[in-house]
Every structure is written in C-alpha cells, then in structure tokens.
Image: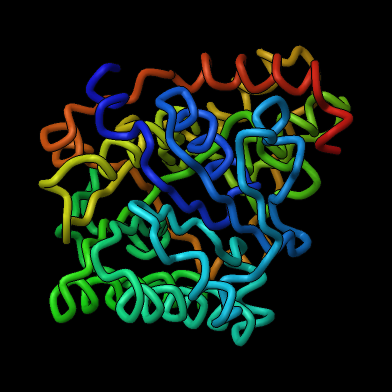
Length: 331
C-alpha cells in the first residue's frame, strides 16, 4: 500500500468514462493514495454514467461533462496529466451491429482524438486502454493468453481491435506510454442495472431482486470468466504505476471458468429470489456467440504481482448487499 501511496500521491490523473462502474471504482481507489483526479464523462444514454457513483468523494474530484470526441475539450484535459485511464466507450456489441457508425465514432475516432492530442500536447503521459475479450472471437484454446489470434465478430469488437492497434502505433512510432487491457466479463458495485448491455451479472441480480425469470440461452454450459470490479480496478492501477508495462498488452479476468448456468444459479441462491428459465438461442446472438472463454492471467500476475481476490460468489454477495442499500440510485 505504501508503494502505491509513494507513486500516486499528488499525481494528476484523468479518467474518461469516469462516472461508470470501472472509472468510478478506480477513482475511489486512487483517492486513498492522495491522487488528484479529473473525471470526464459524456453521460450518454443508455450507458453507465451515474453521479451517485462518486457519492462521498465528489468534493475531491474535478468532474467535467464532456465527450472524448470534442477536440478542444480533450486538448485541454490531457494537458499536464501524469496518467490517463481511458474508459469512455460505446459498450454494447448488439448496439454496434444496429449502429456501427456510432460505435466507430466513439470507440475508434474518440480514442484517436485523445491520442492525437496527447501526441501534440502531452506525449509523456501514460495512458491505459480498456479493450474486451470479445476481440478474440471464438476461442481456439482455453485459457486464452495474449498471443491468441484476434477474430472480432461484431463492429464493437472490431473497433476495439482497431483502437488497440492504434494505441500500439502511437507507442511504437511516437513513444507515448500506452498499456492495453483485454477485459473478461466485469461486474460488481456501481454498475447501472437498467438493462443487460453493460453487465449481465448485474442485470441478473436485478431480475432476481424483482423475482423475475432469469433466462439462459441453450443449456447454459458455455464457460465465462467473471471479474469483480475492485480486482479489475486494482490491476489497472498497478499497471499505471509500473515502468515495465509501457507498450504491453494484458488479458485480465479471474482466470476461473464458470458456466453461464452456474453464474445464474449463484445469483438466485445469493439473492434468494428469481426463477431460472432455459430458452433457445435468439437469431441475433447465434452469429456472435464466442463459445467458451477463460482468461490466462499468467502474464499480468507475473509482471504486476496481481491476483484476483474476490470469488464469483463473494462478488455477487457484495454486489447484492450494495444494491439492497442503494438500489433507488440504479433502477
């Protein structure tokens, strides 16, 4: 903990998408180490921005409602920063199919805008990019390490992959310190609960709270890797303060494969409500289903001495307790 304090105290840090689950959790963790935090968020619907996520710390945050696609705004915000956590994104792979131009505008052009402003006005700032396990497409081997081929199957996954290559270009050609993450299935506290586009675990917790049907496509035996948001935020922060991570790519998840069926059963058991229902795969999902996915966390564990600390059941329990207390702020 003292190592984090020494490396973060007084650092000027920008978090884009900082009103969402991951961005706000990173902010909470950074404040424990006396960092100076600026948050940028466009508050676009139907995504995860929620001012309540900064409850009790808002007076210590510089909050700005603006869009990463705004050239002048990003020019201003990247200046003088030491670290940027770039979490702003269009987050739904199905929405990207329906509106690929919007997805490309945010998930590629928006990030290009930030990188170009960094190149021109603050080329020494360290920037961390949040990619997705969906970039891999169908898994060819389990667990999935960083060398696994990228075969994106939706505009969302494609644009994340193009953006990843762009970050790598700005590191290799312009020397901008970049770190690339490919994230498994995140869940946890401070996640919006209005729809299933952001985190299926969180949405199922809401369905269980309301004693509704939790639907499973097919037999539910497909494996997924679910990572609790506190563990994920800690991984990002450790990568941000390490001098060895510049230009590196990390797959990050729990490293544990859990069947979709087991995840749903865990939610119902913990909440004590809800009914499980199996239904056939809908047509708009069959073409993007990626099969089993489990993260190989060997690289990130060795380089950052990081290990996930929260099991799925523990994470669901903590999430359920959080929403029991604050659900009126989320749905």
